[in-house]
Each structure stands twice: as structure tokens, then as C-alpha cells.
Image (cartoon, rainbow, N blue to C red; front, side, top):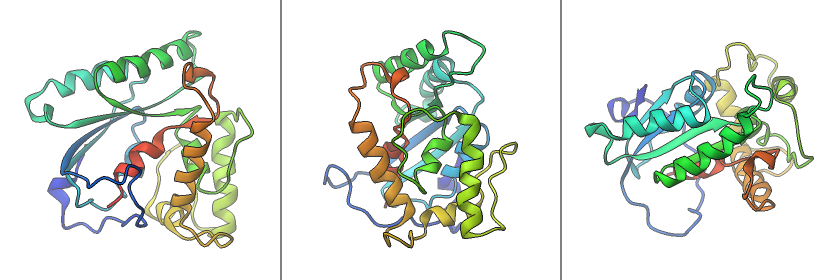
Length: 229
């Protein structure tokens, strides 16, 4: 678990400035981010600079997915220390899971989380799809998760051959994160800003009645917007 309140002196990376989506004046909030992955998602979110609008952030990588993750988040929310926290559930669709009903569980998890008042940052198929959007505007439909790491590393190699995304360790390093923050040489915009725009545009093309059929898409952009200062 990463508690940003206890690490205020650390030099978290500042995200590029960007107007908030609703134009409102943000209020101080506490966040509890419950992640499916034990490595990728926590190692990514811990790179953000502590935002002035956020009082504290706790991040957990659990190993749970879909409904079980939401049920775990529900138990955490009932604890006294988290009763005033805004909860984000971060999980994936996993079409290759051994459970043939995995995509049904994916839809049910989204509905259950929303019914509990939780926010959902899902990815279909996996979180790495959000990382890919920093480098390309993929709107070509399904992309199998087994292809993600090679695609990410192709882009990283062209930028800095020393930076690698290890598909086994599944950790977003500081160097990798900095590349995602840096300006794209063609557009001169931060790659993270480009990813936000791309993910939002792709998401808007679906009706969200059946997220299990909305591949490739992600709502991680909604959580990342909240982490901007």
C-alpha cells in the first residue's frame, strides 16, 4: 500500500497541467484505489506527484479481479479509516481467463461497483492498453493482451533503448513513466495528454450497455484526470 499523505516530501512527478473535465473547482478528497494487479497498476499510480486537491491516497494491489475485487473494496470501505474515502476499483476484462463466464463477471463487477457508489477504471482487455494509448491511437477493435508488451517495448526502444517494460515483472518504472509524460515529437503534446484524449474519444464511441463487448477501451483516463493538479 502506498499512502501519499505519509510521503509528502518525495518528489512525485508532476502531470502536465490540464483543465478539469467539468470546469469545476476541485475539493480536497481522500482516495482509495484498489487494483487488480499487484505490480503494474500500483507501480504506475505511485509515480504521480501528490496533487494539491487530494488529501491522501492509499493504493492497493490485490490480485483479485472483477466481482471479487469489488467485494474486497466494499469491505475496505466499511473500515473506519476509509469511510470518507472516494473508492476507485481498477480491473480488467480477461477473455482468456479459465472461467468461461469471466466477461459476464466483468459486466457484473462494473454494475456492482457503481451501485455501491464506487468509481471504476477498467480496461478491456488489460491495463497495458491504457499505456499503449500514450504512443498510438488504437481504434482498430480487439487487440489481444499477449501483444501488449511487445508493442509497448517497440515504442520504448525507439525513444530510449535502455527503458523496457518487463512483461513478467509488470512494473512501470520511473523512466517509463517519464517517457509517457514527455512531449510527443509530432504533436508537441504530452503523451499522457494524448492518451487521455484518445481514451475519452474511444470510450465515447460505445453506449456502455455491455462493456464486455467494448474492446478495445478503457476508463483509466477518468482516474488519471482526477490525479491532475
